[in-house]
Image 1: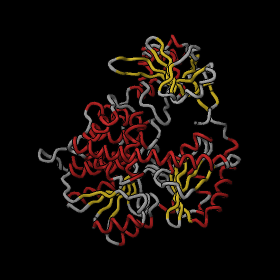
Image 2: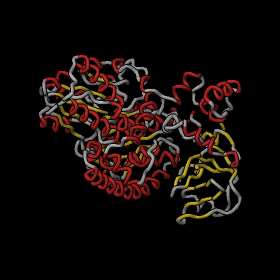
Image 3: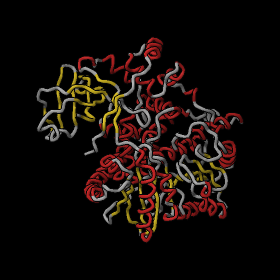
Image 4: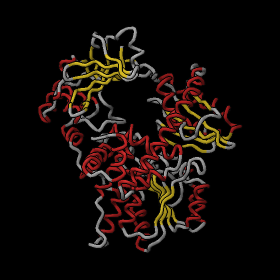
Length: 560
């Protein structure tokens, strides 16, 4: 059970501004208020938010080293050099790898391949182990996607062996670890690209946009080698962006908005297979984050992430369905292992509740699942959590954080105890020797103690209190305009009075109230509501379509 949060009611927006936007965009005052609270208060910003246009994408050449990267890759393609894509085993890396391979094939590259490291054998990204594999693949150029920003030694090793590198990444980096050569990363200290939140597959899309334009300028495209329609790549960009939990604002919102349109109107065989497996009729950001994403991630967690790339590149539906079945089996195995690990993790974390941060390890922890466990612990205890699995003489650790605490900066303060670390504000990872574990735990706790006292307890924002009878289809349709929902653009929550009549119990664990044309659902709340019904519910508003019938659905997220 996740930690119950305190309720924070949103501050009302300025009435005159609400009226102005409501009139201009034919919005209800409620939806206009939500937009204003989320930082969209000008007519220009609201126009861009509600109706994102692909023409608003920034020029790829605003990214540092983009021209140099294009020149290098263009020459490699024209010379028919052997090119190998080095991907990552998460969804962002899988989608970026598939996009890069698709583009190389469209350019007529006859000698290209990809390699996704196995997290257990090679570790994350461009490690010495993966560099050895790359060397045996005999490339003239290696392109990293969603990794490589900290691989200074490994890039030097490849260069010494006559292998050129083009690094594309989006992770934060320490200046001392940044590789020599061409590095395209909006988060590079010397990169002035204005939007830093773009995903790894988003960076790759920018590279491909610049490459397509560069080839257009030399009349490379022809009837026999048609110019690729990069709009058809947006489905993969959307999938990687949502799954990587980057903020769905600015260019990310634009890419996901149009990517979902592509995915629903012209789904590739791999997406069709996933949709059939999950019985999905309309794909939205929730589908990507909670259904498709976990399936693709399961390959890298439990087996071989190359399965995900194979699925996305698949040219036959039946083959795609077979691969999707393998991914589903890996996900079932992942859930079973996760459940066992979570029991151990909760017991250990409960004994550390006096700590500011949670650092736990167990010989029973599976390295592919520690990130999920860390996230679950944050939900339950509202503390930064770092979960460690043994890997030879080392611990591989995955960290998740709470709002306001920069987990990667915390690891930076512990650098003396670590062999390697990296990540973002909310999620990070590191490697350390067994002998340094206690030392690391102490330094991490110190880093947490220095900052966490200033952070308030877990909160949930309630947009407004609504009578149930005021929730109608007009409101639902207007709220749908705020899609896609995700990081930095969460699904709005509303407070409603709980019906005091009895509810149905579904499958011995869920509850449901039926109201004419509407329903209120509480997943896994049957036991909590068995003694008494709470007075107030915090709910998400949406649509339930089943057997040709549509109902307004209110899903309980919190209660008081």
